[in-house]
Length: 177
Image (cartoon, rainbow, N blue to C red; front, side, top):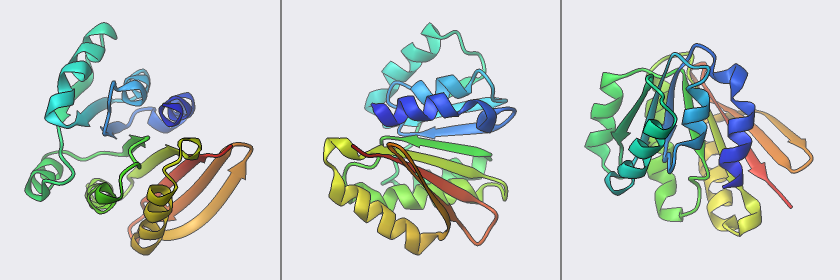
């Protein structure tokens, strides 16, 4: 997944000393990379994907990484999850692919960002694999949920900075052909 790789390459300064949450971790590439610089890292995904996350953590000998289940569509689980822990940095690599998951993802991002007033979310997606309706839907909904502060395009990367009324933001990196 190119979005996860791109985010992992850019994470060093952003993760330094932070409490990091990775949403939809998959194999945990970005979260495990962040663990080299962060204070703590929590990798999350659906229950049937946790086994591979545990294996990745063991292979990388990371003592500051926890693995937890988080289903964006389970509203009560999301409320409970974010009452327990605060995060400074939220990572979400290549999770924008299904229109049905857009609102649950945005709701989860808002909860994560609201856990502390200094939280930042980094969200990546790769437009070259043809999920254009999902990408456009996410951008449209995110712009209604967050205030757009800036937009940057450098080569293959699109970067949007969205800001909540709180001092939080989402940086969206979109890879284009």
